[in-house]
Amino acid sequence: MNGKMHEKSFKDYFESPDFYQLDELLTTEHLMVRSAIRDFVKMEITPYVEGWAEKNHFPKEIVKKFGTIGAFGPTIPAQYGGGGMDYISYGLIMQEIERGDSGMRSTASVQGSLVMYPIYSFGSEEQKNKYLPKLASGEMLGCFGLTEPNHGSNPSGMETKFEDKGDHYLLNGAKMWISNAPEADIAVVWAKNEAGRIHGLIVERGMEGFTTPETHGKWSLRASCTGELVFSDVKVPKENILPGKSGLGAPMKCLDSARFGIAWGAIGAAMDCYDAARRYSLERIQFGKPIGSFQLIQKKLSEMLTEITKAQFLNWRLGLLMEQGKATTPQISMAKRNSVEMALKIAREARQIHGGMGITGEYPMMRHMMNLESVVTYEGTHDIHLLILGAEITGINAFS
Image (spheres, rainbow, N blue to C red):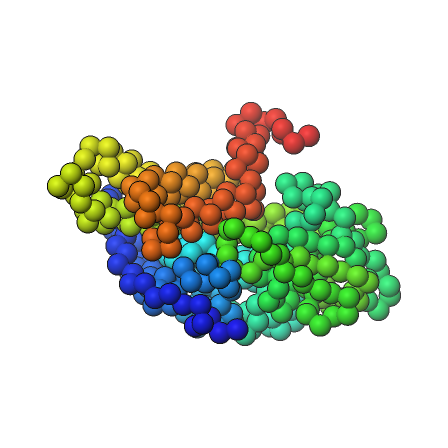
């Protein structure tokens, strides 16, 4: 179905807050990348995303457009079709896309951090050459299979298994809450072998016994597609196993990369809500003057800008640490949960500033609020990230 059938066209007046002049710490390349993605979002996403969300429609055509603009795998080397960029560029791309919509950012970050990253980091040279260029261009869409019906925060308990059948592996099990699944051409699936060791396998659409039923009834991430991965005696060629790393640490490294992108992306959602509220406060007249002249509205806007500014600098520093190979999982957890909590609070405050109009699709806050309720849960819930930090602080693992 053509996404144009669902379009509501809105003019995008977004202006990015930069209260502490963080732009001066960014390189010319960073600014160029951000500008290109911001222009893309203003042209290809924000004019139409309210209509997509209202109709629970995933615009398939956006995949190749993301590939053309370089949103897939920006840190992957150019020889495999990636952008060869640094982590701050990656963060800025995710920030700008999520400013448009969290579901759109999920599509891009799953492709880059959870599909291309493991193939690049743990795959064979043949796998890299076969899949990465097509994923980078958007010719192929991928998904990441870790979460299961009975195992979310505890992925080590996964029940999906594969057996060695001599000339192939036989894969059985199921994954759920999988972004991109209904439209994905390939899935990077994590499963246990006979010895209970976790490995990654590349499962291709069309393999007999592999189905991807769509998840219906979502009130969040409605412009993205979500589904299950079901494996019923799926024969996976032996050359499709990722040879570079096994164990739970492999998918966890992928999640670190994705969570870094989420930390930046959530700031984008927060900035969109703040900017909408700031403009509305100057346009909406009550008691004979703009509501922005009232103390309580100024308090809300001041607190929003303060929290956005703090998060911007936390993420910028994390980006430098990522680039130097020094960033730790607890540091990434801190940034992810801080950004999402901050964005949720700002979305709610911005909705209040808009009054009754704030619940309509004429403004982005309700869509961002619903989206962020998924973002605060996926790739490590808000509480799980607290416990990751708690273990780092005390040296005591609360999970065991």
